[in-house]
Structure formats: structure tokens, C-alpha cells
Length: 409
Image (cartoon, rainbow, N blue to C red; front, side):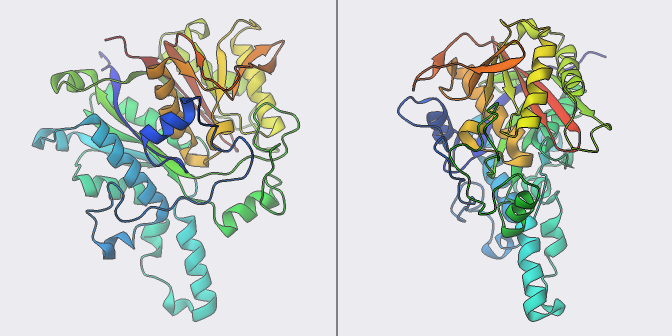
């Protein structure tokens, strides 16, 4: 069966302090602006008012029942639709859907209701806790707000959730089951329990305050990762649908893979061989090889054993070629937002493809299987970018990769 080509026609993002794609692109690529948290210090939890895009039309009483991670998702999805300038028709509403990912779902709401139960009794717990807690609060509310009647799917695959959500939406359009999908991820897990759990796992210091030596990808002196939260969404369409309505095409999704590594039970980190296999399967799906990739958007979270496995996997994919693709990682810029990370990285990758620039911080080359920083000063690195490979490698062995290409027209 002939597979549909899948293109990106809109992007939306909440990555504090950036609350729009324009803010995000300026912070990422404008030489006057430093990376978001380059100097250390995790961002405060993302908060959105009812006046923010996508939320203003929701009655206040209903809005209070929507969990924070889902509000972030609604806002990012709304911006992506504004960007795409979708003109809804009855047929398109029937064939449009949502694919949303989150690792923790409504953790904030669960925490609040546990406090209510302990202080005021279980009879005071909200009857809306379960609808707020479950991961499909994001996809369901986005579909309801936009009156979409196509597939409405939720994915919880740890830190790979956003990438899996985009990849599975890509598959639905590719197969002809949908014409348009809102796809991405959202996370709002910077709560007392969320940060406490990371600290207990040795991923944050006891104070939960990270230093300038934290969250530095491929740096053996980086002891902890930089926690963050936010949301990223893409509007994916079949090429035919986008061209018929005269949409501006930003990029093309050409390959996807999702792989589970059942052998990483002890330390929760996949082997470099399994990570390399994930990348190779995505390249195979795109009918490409690593020599055609200009940038690898690495997952690299700033934890030595995780980053080392990914570095070795990239080197293995490149067959030891030191002239392999540039390696870019967003953790230096916008931290690690768990299930939203892959979707935020996808928006960043599309910004790079569109502007033909790579951010000044976070660029590496593999030299003798070791990532070596590229010193580009305080200005973005101009380069010719045609395609990128995006990695999301989760604790516990759920791994995914995407191939995203510049639209040639």
C-alpha cells in the first residue's frame, strides 16, 4: 500500500519562560539571549492563566477540573493550530484527531487530593480526581475543545512519551486513517512529591536546587539533571491535505521507531546497542542512512551513565566516523521535561531546520566515541541542515527516534 507523506504545518510550545513558539525560537537561536538555564537553577513550575490561548473559551468551572499538565497541552495545541491556520470543515473534523503523551499525568492534582484526605478526611476528596489523574486528560480535553472526531490517543512511555505520540500520529496519517493529527506531549511534575522522588533516586541534590554544573549533557562532572516542565505540539497532516488547503509546510516527518529494551532492568538504562538499533530502525523507516543526517538531537540528560550509552550508540551508528552528524541537545537550553521532552525537542528541531542554525550551546561532535563540544561563541552556528534524527531514551528501556526533514517544496 502506498504510504502517505506526512508534513508539519504548525508548532506550539510552553517551555518556561517561553510561552509561544516565537519566544522559544528567539531564546533558542537569538545571539542576544542566553540559553534558558545555562547558568543553573531549575525553572519554576509552568502556570497559565485562563486568558492564555486555548483556555479562554473554557468556562472557569470546567477549567478548574482540568489538570495542570492538560492545560499546558491545550495551550500548546491551540498555538500549533493558530500557526497552521486550519480551516475546519465537517469532513476534516471527522478525520482529525489527537495523540498526546505524558509520563506522570496529573501528579499535581493527586498530591493535592492526598493532602485533602489526610487533613480533612477522605469524604472531602474531589470526585474529579481520577479524570484529572489519568494521562488521557490531555488528549480528551484537546479533542473536546476543538470538536475533533478522529482518533483520540494517549501514550505514557516515560521520557519517550512525546516522541511516541508524534510517531504514532505519523503512522495514522501515513496509513490513511487520519488526515490531520495534533501530536505532542505535556508534563507538570515539578511538585513536592515529583522532585522528592527524583532526589531519592539520586537524580537531584537533597536541596532540589541544581547548580551550574548540573544538567550539562555529555559532561562527566554533571551529577544531576535539570528538571523542567511544559508542553510541545505539532500539527501533522498528509501532504495532500496540506497542499489542498494551501498550508505553509514547515518540515516533513519521514521515519519513526519505537523499541523496548527488556535487558535494562538493573540500572534502568538501555545498552548502547539497543539505542543504536532504535536509531537505525528510524533511519530504515525513512529509507535513509546516518550519512544523510545533519544533526542528531540527543536525549542526553546530563547523567553520566545515560549520556555515555547514547554517545556510544551514536558512534556505533556512525561506524566510528568522526565526520558524522553534529550532535545537538536541548537539555542545556530548556532542561528535561520528561514526557514532554521529545515534543519540545521536535519544535526546537523544526526551528533549526527553518532558520538553518544550530544553537550556540549544546553542540558536539563524536571524536573517538567521545562527544567533544563545538565552541561557537555566543552566536548560533550557521549551517546547511536538511535532516535531523531525534532521540528519546527513557529510563526503563522505552526508546523512540524520529527522522525530521527540511521541506523542499
